Image (cartoon, rainbow, N blue to C red; front, top):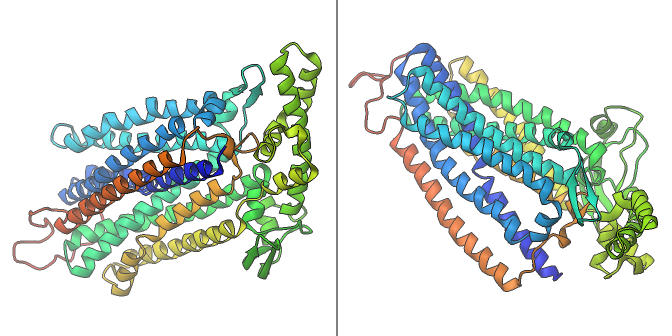
Length: 523
C-alpha cells in the first residue's frame, strides 16, 4: 500500500472527525440543559423560563442539523476510504453503528420536531417529555458510537476466523460492557456538558456586559454555573477513571502520555513538565512529582507503570508469535483441514495482528529480518511529544474550567452576576473546552497508532485502494464545503445571539420604560 494513500486517508478522516466533534458535544450538553430549563418552566409556570428554553433550543437546533450532516459523511468514509477495515471487522464494528441509527438517531429525530413545533400543541408535561426524549436520544447516539470506538481501542468479545479471514463476534455482551467504551462514554459526555455550559455562561455574560436582557441572562448564567460545575468535576473524576482503564488495556498509550521511556520502581512519578525527544528516547528538563502516576494509574503503591522500552520488547515477542500465526493462516488457506496449522493458530492466533505489522516492510512476515522485527516493534510507540503535550494542555483546561464554574456558582449564589471582570473572563473562555475536547480525541486516536484496531489490524492495512489524486480532491472538497458550513453555522448562531431571546418582543422582566426589577435570578 502506498504510504501516501494511508497518510491522506488518515488526514481526511481526522479532518472530518474533528470537524464533526465541534457540533456533537454542544448538542449533548444543550439537550440536557434544555430539560433543566423547561423543568423549571413546568414547575413554576413563569413565562421567562419558556423564553429561556426556546432561545437556547434555537441554538441547539442550528447545531443539531450540522452535527447530523457531518456525522453521516464521516460514517460513509468507512466504506469509501477504509473498505478493508470494514471488511475485516465490519461484523463487530458495524453492529453498534447500526443500533445507533435504528435506536438513538430515530428516537431523537422523532421527538425533535415535537420539541420545536409542539409548544402550543402539547401540554407542558407532554412537551417536557419530548425535550427529554431528544436529550436521551442524543446521548444514546454517543453511547453506541463510543461502544464502537471503544472496541477499536480494546477489541474484546471477538476472534479471528481463519476460514472467513475476518473478525467475528463471540460475546456481544463483552463488546457492550467493554471497560474502555464505558469510560470513554461518561468522560466524553461530561466534556460535552462542560462545552454547553461554557457557551451558555459566556453568552449570558456577554448580555450582562452589554446590559441586555438582564433577567434572562442572570437565570441562564445560574443554570450554566451549577450544571457546568457538576460537569467539570465529573470530567476530571471520569478522566482519572479513563486513565486507570489504560493501565490494563492500553499500556503503550499511557506510557506515551507520560513520556515514560523506561519502567520506574513502583510507585512511578508523574512528569509535570519536560521535553520528550523521540530520537534520543529521553525527556529533557523533566520535572517529576514522586508517586503520583503510580497512584493514579494503578491505584496502589507497589505496582509498576511499564515504560515504552519494555513494552517494545514485549511487542517483539508478540511479533515473533504473530509470524507463526501468519504461517498457520497461509497453510489453512491452502488446506482448511490442516490440523497441525490449526493447532499452531490456536497457540499464536491472538498475536496475528502483530505479525501483520511486518507487512509494512516485507511481503511475507515469515521472511522478516531481526532488524525489521525490531523496527516494527518500535512502530508501536505513538508520537510521544504530541501525546505528552496534548494531554497536559487538555488537563490544564479541565482544571481551569473547574475554577471558572466554581467562581460562577459562587457569584450567582451571592447574587453578584454583574461582576465585570468575571463576565469578561467567561466570554474569553468559551472556546477553551472545545480545544480540550479536540485534544482528547487526538490523544485517543493518535495514542492507538499504529493500530486501526488495537493489536488486531494495523492502520496501513485498513485503507481502500485509492489514488492520491482522488484523496486530494475529496480533502479539498470537504475542506471547502465544511468551511462554508462553518461560516453558516457561526453566522446563524451570532445572528441568533444578536437578536436576543425575545426577538423583537419586550423583555417580560422589564416594565415598559421602567428600570430592571430587582428580582432574584432563580426559579
